[in-house]
Image (cartoon, rainbow, N blue to C red; front, side, top):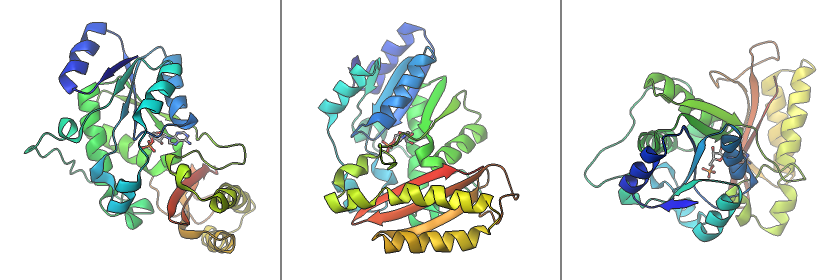
Length: 279
Ligand code: AMP
């Protein structure tokens, strides 16, 4: 696997290969979920680039940025063994050249206002900015992102549409631990007790999906879901049954297709998100 820290070095190497590129952007502390993106890209026959960049502009909480796990050597080994062709490991200055404003100022309608948008002000502008910048650097034919971050993926899809970028977005299903907890770099920071409790998030999402299918109203189910999570010892920020296209709240199973149940909850001081596609 090639490792590049400089944009110019990677670009000149990629141009010489003359092959379609598949790209999986990450923030590192890699797990099977990230590696699945790499494997999907390889299976599609792409020259596969993964990036590791803990993007400061998408952290609304400076403590979260500071505590974000960093282990580039171990990550490089994992990527190499998953068959990744290139690791891009840029510095902040390489991604954001001083004095250049690369901020994305698109109107995402409801997509960046609800759920994560409400609780993490500025997060999605930072995310869209870094993804746009990385796409401009890597110029992939295919971009692989996880369903785990459904709202993020919806915004990136809309950005690709609005900017008419020549990139196809491919969604990778959420990879989970054996007990159902969605894999996340943040799981490393869970206390033993919270690691035991956290699978209730997925169980509650499945339960909520079942209730919606039975014909119950979404707001009622969401309120109950918040109670279930709270009683389990978590601190939910939201539980929402959303229209999978607009991300606005859905009321009933028949309302829209797809419908996605989405949740964010604190497990101790670790903020976890998850979702399931109900319909
Ligand atoms: P992150 O490093 O958390 O920014 O995630 C990088 C990419 O990996 C994003 O496209 C995520 O949606 C995806 N990802 C993270 N966790 C998982 C998971 N458990 N299953 C599938 N994809 C994931």
